[in-house]
Image 1 (cartoon, chains in turn red, brown):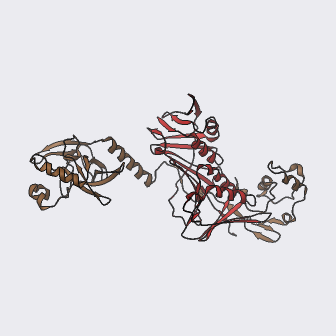
Image 2 (image 1 turned 90 degrees about the vertical axis):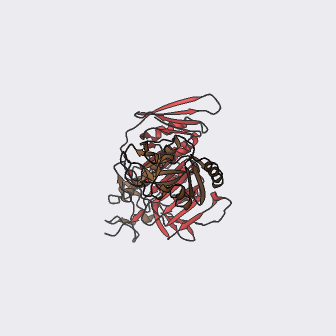
Length: 260
Length: 254
């Protein structure tokens, strides 16, 4: 028996909005420690890794580890039927081929049940090594979304270069080029507006705008985003989900091909 | 699939069409407006369609290695790489060492919270009274039992010791330990039915003590120092070497 209850269905809605751009379907791995999801997009260029800890739920029970393959578009449809402050309960039997979402409205005595068919997904699971990154940038998530959106009008890829002075986002295309520089700020009053850079070595990497844009769909989850970069390893874009866990995106860098 | 994201100065109006051509030779661009997919969001784009393509595009040539030449200037092809080139695909459901450790810790916490005592039984030993014997095999590193009792501070412990010393029949069940620089004591004098308090002393025992924080309170757990077979008595070092204690309890020396 699996049962997870969350008083704010809005959080789940936001999580779904943040991943359904990249993934059509995904396996939710449920265990005693919580719910995990790891999946690559169709092109295998980016990866989504979601962790929801069991302590973050208002009620959590998972007798046996189980993997639920779900169609994210269908799941999103179901969650659209709920109000943001509805309490949601996700339920599944141990060997079931369906999952049930129950929404309880705060004010009225209204309970809605949605049962969804599960899918058998044969997904590849990647082993992600723990890495020390050369640069770790924390910045307002809204600012990051804005920069990515603005720059993707000009080119297909964005160069992110991080130095002691700050971070530079740049791109170029047919009409010309664009650069956005942000410097480290030390506004300790509002951590959420702070830009902080933890740098061991300067790094410059190129990434496809298309994916970065999809990542920024997670912006409503939290005010701060963390970008971790090292030479020649995938970028990690991390959004914390307050009290519940985190959502991480990995993106392979674009690399100049050698002459031969 | 989406390999066509190579950086080349594409006209923003027809990204789709350009992508398809990346693997072939570039064809002369048909500039007939009706063949171009319109983007809904900008009306400005529509005006641009009427204009001929910028001359720069005509000078573009693709080399065999994927590089693009625009007006004699060579632009390197930049390709998207796959994540699978960086991270290994795990076909099995093996867990990382970290998750295994986390699960172990969580299990231990659960056992402690529920007060489960398994794989042990009481046996009376001649000369030393009750002792605890393993009724199942334990592997080195396994959790065996908790030394459970009242968690008290040293001041309270002193008071209780004085009280206990008046009665000759009370054994010594006070376990003093330090955790994060703070002195604590677990008093297991009361007959609680718990087995941890009955484990006997040996200077080369098969258990060792660990402290573990649960709900912000330190707990004492006894862990198997070596593999323990069924029927073996479990023992740990009480650690008390003071003269006074040795006088009263000469067995502490062994």
